[in-house]
Length: 102
Image (cartoon, rainbow, N blue to C red; front, top):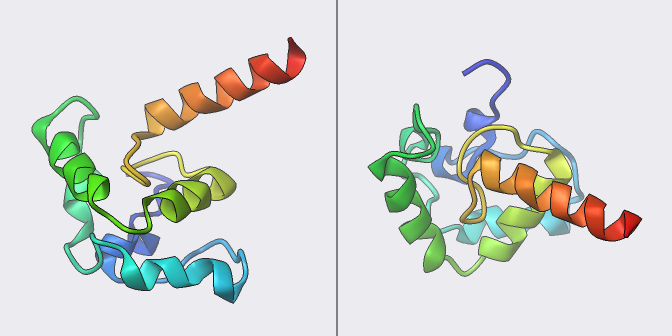
């Protein structure tokens, strides 16, 4: 997956590639996906059963909001972060832009 940040995903047990400050990165330690391996969170297709499984893990995660905030700040273009797919995050950004210009 060209350009993905799968190695920086908490599921891989790794740290962030985007520096948002140490305090803002501590959420990774409490991530429900931590250490589960990144393949579930970086599926080949955003429409497959892997995405639903990943989202179900995010749904019970105590730091889902922080994860999504990170993904938005880092402009993650691949994978499931904060219970959202890359497509959903792009849609969220478009809606925000439209509200700002309305």
